[in-house]
Length: 183
Ligand SMILES: [Zn+2]
Ligand SMILES: [Zn+2]
Image 1 (cartoon, protein in one colour):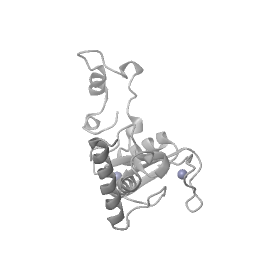
Image 2 (cartoon, helix red, strand yellow):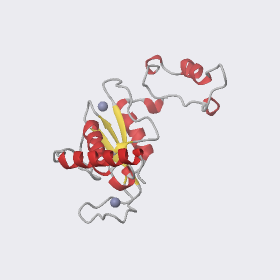
Image 3 (cartoon, helix red, strand yellow):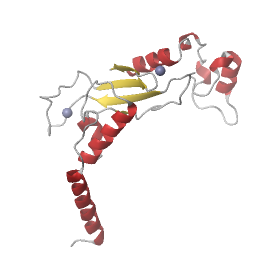
Image 4 (cartoon, protein in one colour):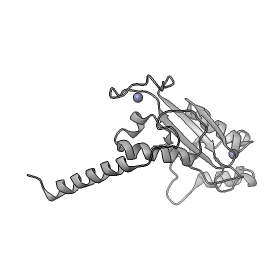
């Protein structure tokens, strides 16, 4: 027997189906893996479009599309005229519902992309560390010469104290002690 809740879900599904049918043809960034130079807005809009068309389930592995890197700083504040965003794409295909005859995927599991929107600078690599280090070279030249934080100051600070902050204030050049700058 159908409950009111089931009926509402059916109605939502029908409305979504109608929305999909009536949506204008997509003219934005490709709805698949690609290495075209695109702005963060274009990549975000394309990923939203894929989800609109296919649903959120499996949106990372099935779309293979660029999405904001979910496990770290995704968009940094605008600093020194730069503003960096990190994307990732899952390029390993385990889905038997589609193939890649027309849009082959690169080797490996993931790709990472950093984009500096104000400059149009970007880098794609399969190595996240390379992307993070190179984007710092772009936006913060000289960061590699900064003193290295002692291991004992990493991790969660003890209650009521912030030894990392104290250490940075004592050891970093003043012009590196600005919001949005790397440690
Ligand atoms: Zn830049
Ligand atoms: Zn695939």
